[in-house]
Amino acid sequence: MFETITKHVRENSVVRFLLSHLIILLAALLICAVGFRSAFVIVRNDVLDSTMFAMTQAVSSVDNGLTELRTLGMQTVFLREFARRRKVWYNHLL
Figure (cartoon, rainbow, N blue to C red):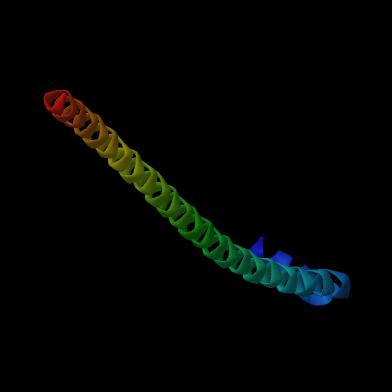
């Protein structure tokens, strides 16, 4: 059976033509698939890196905001205590 198929392939020029082009087409598709896979991995890594950078920037921004909020809270406590002591000192003078 295999011998009859190979005999038809050798004798029929149309089948040989189609078979050779099919092999070339499959090789080109394989090369494209490997290239697209590599490009996909590169783009995926770039997206992950940029997302990580954006998240780092967001964390830094939130951290700076919380530090500023803590500073304002401490200043408020200090000013209240200062005003209370000044009032006590001022009432002491009267």
